[in-house]
Length: 427
Image (cartoon, rainbow, N blue to C red; front, side, top):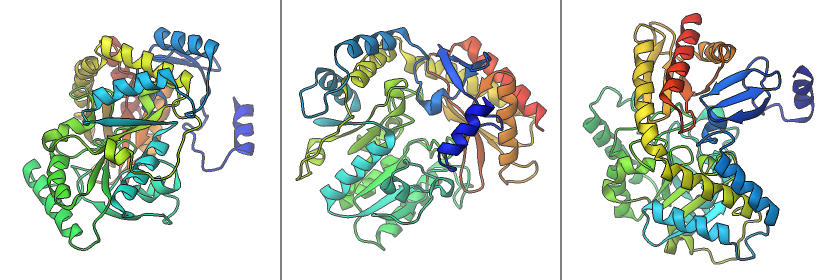
C-alpha cells in the first residue's frame, strides 16, 4: 500500500486528493461492501462518490457488460447504436420533459459542459446564473460556474457567472426566516439581480448540493425562481448528477420537489445511472438540443458497453423499487443519526433526503466549521469498517452519507452504530 501511494505521488498531480492519512486501495466489492488490498471489509456509505448507486458487483449489470463486451464494446456515435437508442428512449420517457432529446457523455462534468453550450447557444448569451455553494464539475466552463471556493482553482472563465441566494437553507442572510419568507427573499434577490445585468442564458442548480455538504433550499424555491425566469426567457438547468434516479426517495428526480412550474428545460445526469460505468448525459427539449448549427459527436459517450450497463441498472432500479427503498431505509437512517447526535454539541445539523444525508460539524459553542474533526471521523469510521465522505463550503464541514440504494435496514443500523462510535471517539 505504501509503495502504491509513493508511486501515485510521483506520477499523478499533487492536487489529486486522496482520503485518509494512509490511503485506501479498494480491490473488490459485493452488495454494499468493499474490500481493500489487505483484506479488510468495509460497509460502503459513499459508493464511489454516489456512483455505485445500486450495488457493487450487481449480477444483472455484470452480465450485461460481459455479454455486450463479447459482441462489440465501442463504435462511436457515427454509427447507429441500438443500446444507446434503447436507453435514450427510457430516459426521455422518465424525464418529464416534453419532446425530450438525450445526448450521452462520459461524466457529469461533460454533461454540464454540454448543457452550458446548449443554453448559451440557444439564448445567445454567455451570462449564467448559478447558486452559491454549488459544484458542477472539473472542466474550464464547469469550474467557472462553481460557487465553492474549495473546488474553484481559477477565476478565469468563458462565462460571466452571477451567483444567487438559496442553495443553503441554514446559513446566510436569510437563514432566520421561515421557509415561505426564505423563498420570498431569494426570489426578490433574483429579481433585483436581473435588474442589473443583461439577460442570462440559464440558471443552473443542484436540487441538493452534493459537494457543498448535501444542503438544499425549501421545496418550491426553484419553482418560484422559474416564474421569474420565464418572464425573461431564461432557461432552467437542473444538475441531477447526484440527485437523480430516486436517491432522494420522495422523488425520482430532485427537481420534482420544485416542479410546480413544470419540468426544467435541461436536465443533466451521470454517476449512478451506470452503477460505476462511465455514463453522463443531457436531456433537453428538442428545440434546445437541436440549436447547434455545426457538427458534433461523442467518441465515447453512448458507447455500447456502458449503455448495456445503464439499461440493466435502470431496469433493476425500477423493478426493485429502489426509490421506495431509499425513502424507507433513508428515513430510518436519518432519524437514527439525529438520535445519535442529539447530545453532541459539535453537530450542528443532520439533513438530507432518502439516502443522501449530511451531518454538519462545527466547533462546540460556535457556528464555525470543524474540518479537523470531519477528517478524524472519517478515519475513525474507516477503522471500524465504514466508509463515508465529506464536503462543505464557505466555512462549513459536513460528513456525506450516501450508500447504494439497495441498503438494508440492518446495514443502515450497522452503519449508524459505527458512525456513532466515530463521533463519540472524536469529541
